[in-house]
Image (cartoon, rainbow, N blue to C red):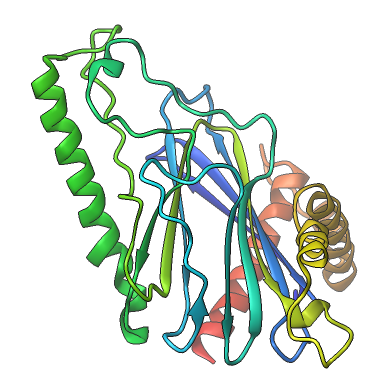
Length: 295
């Protein structure tokens, strides 16, 4: 819908299921309003013992002015905030934060810890780039992948220099590549990386200050109001909103297509009604997505 969406990806190569929920606050606002993403990554089948790198990037037009984030060699700690202003949207605050207190961080075993300059996996790693507007969609291939390659090469050389050939389980040490924690001057593209163990949940929010300001004479929220606005579209408040939105969609979907009655007329062996409803929703989503893409 206009203010809510849900996307599921089953990645059998990585053995994970990715659920991405979208909520848009005040979607009819002239500046597009504010929005939040809830990402949940869970293991398929047996518990996954391998870490997963989660990447998210913000790309802003060159005309925007972004408040520089403090460069910290080992990465950013806790909730990540990115602030700035753009000609079309005005002042904004972007946020990335853990959505669950049970998120787990991978740990290196005692053998791997002997390798020099291992990344601090408790931190958010980042990269700021100055990229022309027309090239922003190529940042993953042109910048991120080469940066991760350099990180892996450095770790591999450090592993050889340390003399560590295997971890405590007898396997080669787990080398986790991370972004370099660097910011170019006048950066307008920011990539953030978290390394975690499934299951984990992360909220990414974009707060348009104008969509929360009732007095048109004001352009920017005070710090306290900004915090309250972010809390209203993330974490526990977002959990409640998403539950309500999903129920509303299910009711509207059933009313529009009378799906439960139609399914009762179909007898497909070894397929539950729940699976058929899920299939119908996927078909509906693909139809709308195709119409929107080709229109």
